Image (cartoon, rainbow, N blue to C red):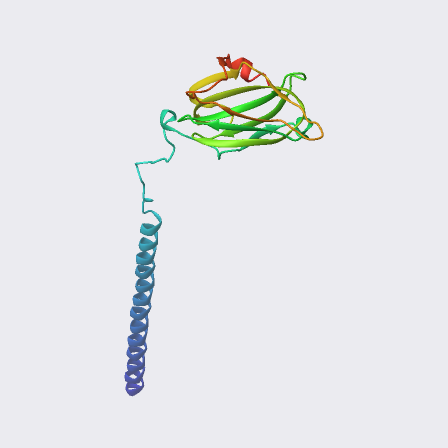
Length: 200
């Protein structure tokens, strides 16, 4: 009876030691997992909460309107009417000005626009295939073309004399005009109101 009690006590102590060991091991694993998650969680939170980089200075490539100089290529056709462009006549335009121009060829009899073209500074352009008839020439000079008009230094003019085009079996009509002053020039121009220029 006494020996049996001693054995039971030893088995109990062994069982107790294993229980304590497993408990300590479990607690250690538990804290390891929790602490590890906490560190991971903190790292993730820190990464997600970092402020986004900001640039307080904004830049733009758009120039102020008084410094813009938007232009078109020489000879850019803004509008034309093929009714007046099935002949053999031609009109050569010389722009010796320091600024660009737009020119309108207007049918004097029909009162309709025949040709509307952009002519660069110090450039030449020729309108071909002009039909027989009488035409007026209006032009505008200026700077910074915004798609419908110059925004600076606008000047509107019209040639006093009309241009008469006629064709027969052997001849056809050609004209050369200059929309800049020339020493030996023989064509007169008048200033016109912008509303007159843009009514066509």
